[in-house]
Length: 420
Ligand code: COA
Image 1: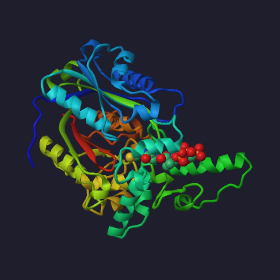
Image 2: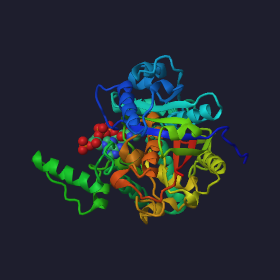
Image 3: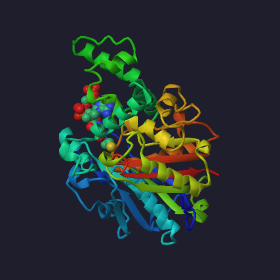
Image 4: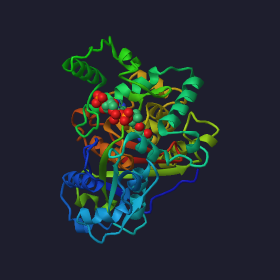
């Protein structure tokens, strides 16, 4: 593989996000303003917004979700950054990660010194059928969408192929859901802030309050198998295998590395970036792996001169539970077929040997699609600076990785971050 280099070093000196959730009547511009305020509060020595040279905003489809196109310049006005060059970046659910990469490249090229990277999406205003159709446009309109494919169906196809190839059952999927809800419960910005056990207790309490029969699940397995509490969405994926339809925004402030100490004593350097593309799912020879993710990860590792074994934690694109399992294999944490077993064994849990999705991931933190890739960087920022509160993985965390996928893997973007 060709080894690529950044022309100049790039560091993250601030990172913030809005709360993720379903917020009727709140637009992406207000969500990004929240994230921007949150980010400003994290820049230890403060900064003058006039220093921002340009903006890159990841956004999948404000046209379909909000009826608003040409979103990036609107954000400059809303954030008080008038006249700064602002570019919207669209790569489906990898829009945020791709925007981050554009920001890195703008600084590395020598063009800009200070860049604001944002990610935004407002999805919950549409009824679910229309949101599902809007998301499906990230598939292939010629071959896939006319066959009735939706995103749950795409990932269900991958899941059934994966489980069949490795002789596994849905227990590997459930282990990811349980873990990510555990982590999300420790994240005050998460869309779903409840552990599965808490969800069960809430549902029992709600039934009792309404005078309805109270469900008598013996354990989480019974809850997961209950077609009412955890309905089948697209076999073998049930409700708790899916990320939700979320609203939210995230942003990070990038600067030329040699300026970073003017902003903070603890910058987080971006030492690797990789991106790759692929055709749509129907044409791929193997749907139990995402080739573009393997290539993007390889490129990022080579640039950063680190190996998967050295990574302290990863935020990966778990839009469905199967996606996390495949992702942990594609980024080299586990051999093919072993990612789900690693989740069952607790290896990927917060205090396990290879923590994955300490934020709660897309599954529990939420998945406002254009924001997700940037929110992953926000979690790495918090973890590497030991600012993740009760979900912190400890002082030894030095290297973090983000893995952001568009569609079923037509785009993958991987970044590697370092605290020195
Ligand atoms: N995980 C767990 N619980 C969920 C959930 C999810 N993904 N989505 C909704 N819920 C819960 C709600 O909180 C609500 O709970 P309550 O009854 O206790 O209040 C209940 O399920 C019904 O919520 P609702 O919003 O009516 O669900 P829905 O049927 O409209 O949507 C899905 C459920 C799975 C269809 C939807 O979340 C979805 O499409 N997810 C995938 C999004 C996607 O494809 N993103 C792109 C990926 S690449």
